[in-house]
Length: 423
Image (cartoon, rainbow, N blue to C red; front, side, top):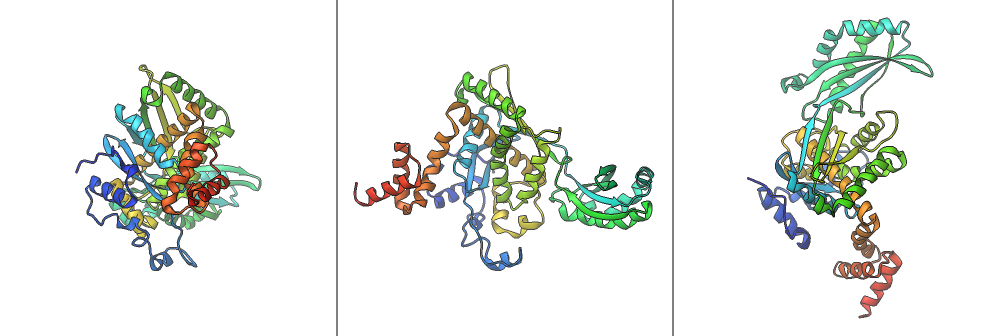
């Protein structure tokens, strides 16, 4: 079934109505997304088998971003986040990219890196070459650990051996490269690294110490680009100011940290919704931002011949569809179904697209009106609820404090008292 992510009036529907709308739009069975209801999703028994010492669960709001076209296909995107304005901002930015085909992605593949640290090496340079001489044998040994992965077209594909000067002498660091296909890959590459350790010890006379994957997933990069319409952005002056803001983030690590945080607002929300490892993805992205020796913006912007804004970005995204919480958490499975991702690369493409959209929305807000105006208007509902407003009162209290330009909890309490007094 063809999906149209351009859904008008979704914001005016109730949560129950929205769920029904996106379920129908995606062409899913009526109960396929039932796990999004906390009463039908993850239960205590299942949670008790996922982590230790379980006493309960923390619910995070799950919104659906609309308007996305990713590689020619419309896409509805689940986003788990507690921060106001994130879902709306991503949806609005995606709308501005629709006239020019949405988001286009490409990938370097699904290769993860496992590191094996060899210490107490008598002859590091000769040891390095002995490892390379045995590369075929070592790859075969690694692949014996996961024959299923090989059957799926993956497995160990190469080695890199580094001599690393440290404060405690030279270490030999072996990088095992493994194509993990649709898995995140941590368990697979960790098992391979463990299997190689004894043979590496025999080859080098060294002592194997750490044997673990690297979250600096530089061989698993997703690239994304999109053209955002100048008129929808607000005109040539807004485009030029976004370019200036982008240049600021590229040149200054203080600005880059906040610029990239805006990207991760979108990325992490989708990673969390799909049950993937938010910490691994965040570590990979931030280390990638510093790959040239200084921390820089992950995205960049240019102006095309027609005056439209072109955004581009590259992110290492170690995400998967198999294993871990992605399979154990019912809501994560429902999120994958809503996206319609049939591969880890498709999921990464959607995640990268949301990250770029989120970043564009933040840059536009900063350049056009200042971040507080739009963000705080959406934040007003949270402030109203924090002030004690009941469900039927929240919208009115939010409207009042936005109109007054004072979006603070003490003002919300004052307006709540007035509302309940009939004023």
